[in-house]
Image (cartoon, rainbow, N blue to C red; front, top):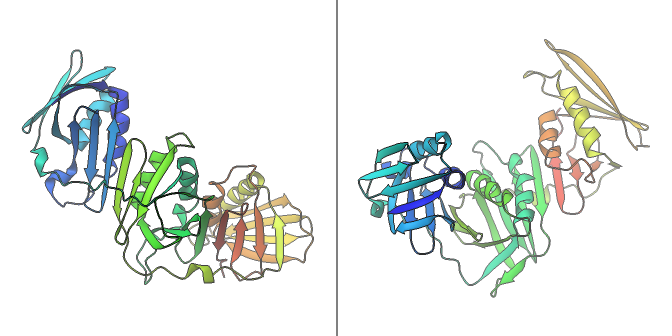
Amino acid sequence: MKVICSRETLLGAVQLVGAAVAARELKPILRNLKMVADGVGLTLMATDLELGIRHEMRSPRIEKEGAAILPTNKITQILREATDEELTIEADENHVLVQGLQSEWEMPSENPDEFPDIPIQLEEETHEAQAGVVAQMIRRTIFAAAKESTKFAMNGILWEIDGKNLRLVATDSKRLALAISPPLNRVGQVESKVPSHLTPTKAMQLLERHLANLPPDAPLTFVLRANDALFRTETTTLYTRLVEGRYPPYREIFPKKTNVKMNLAVGPFLTAVRQSAIMTDDESRRVLFHFEKSQLILQAQGPSTGRAKVPLAIEYDGPALDIQFDPTFLTEMLRTLGPEDPLTLELIDGVKPALFKSGSDYSYLVMPMA
């Protein structure tokens, strides 16, 4: 195999695909990337057997078709440190040679035939959405996914087709984020009701990273199967096994009725939360939100840090109400919104879950602190 390609373009591709390289020791070859050069272009792939990605590059010049195994860490370092605009990569099953105008790097390689295959076949029945929409939905939910194992399976994002819409849900039992898409395009005879599918956090981080670099209206085609899922754009195919286990009945958690509803400005509200959080510490990771007529007062106090009091003018004409939140739970959500995005807060009282909404397509439910 011999190819000539842009160093910067190849670096971006290697960094994207490299995120799927096995983090734990499985097979030694899985610590590498596979590169395939053919008449169409150059394809990079990586897998940890649970997650796999194939990324196609059409711009490289293919001088000799073939396949090679590239050591992930070394090729990434070479592409970062080299100063050439173009690099030549020549490889067989024993060696990889990377050459610039003057510098060159030679590395041992392995037999590319031993690299596991990555499923890429889409069924005739698929769904299609815009890359920008799905990227935003992932950003607005993924931070709420559980980081540790619990009795429910919550380590990822739940994908659910509800009629014509896609619902993405993430929760760690202390907060829950829900994003709803506009109507999806369907390819083939797709069932109107598809079972829920829990996709791993790592796969969703990689998918969002890729989608964020595409034009917002670029198509994303996906299929959700019994044990795995496949996502495809024009250049990239991502495969992931699903998380096993039972997801909590999240629809039952949302309050049927609230007593207080108010509009908030995202920008000033985020600033006030961050300012008050300065005086929290690990022992007292909480901010008191005191609502009174036309004003919200945020207060925090730590035994060793000091105290903060931050007033914020708001449109509120209800009774005085106190509620306490972990400020991180709010800032993580608020950072996914634009400063001018609409935001409403609905409360029952000071001890039951608070419901934040941005438009009709995003909801965030968060438990207050006792």
